[in-house]
Length: 185
Image 1 (spheres, rainbow, N blue to C red):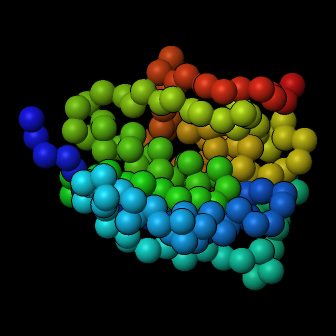
Image 2: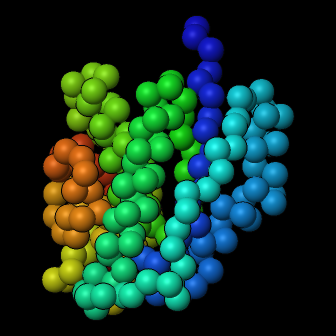
């Protein structure tokens, strides 16, 4: 049996994708609760790799109302993709602490890229959420990008969330949604 890989804890304190403030405090809350220490108590090699720098709402323009803050969110997703891919290449497991769900575009794309490079096979994705996160700028009732990352990962819009990697990132036939309770028409 091979040793367990190290865990690289990476925070992404982003709330631009959501319509409500506050989820940017997620990484801090996990750290205050002692997540890294608890992982170490379980005998895991957990390393806190800090936070990705994210813009605050007051410092950027929301832009297109059908894809609010999409360029700024895409920039964060690209950085998350690069940092997660670096961890995966080093043989570690990135444990990403968010932030709103738009960051899924960055973490999933890195995992898909690493999986394909290592095996030549597509990534199988279990998307656990109460919502489908498959809205597009054309179908969204709110314009909030946190409802769109799975659409981008599957090859749809907003493309800028994953325009730095293979497309589609994941294929529908290898994607399963769990925990759904509310899906927009």
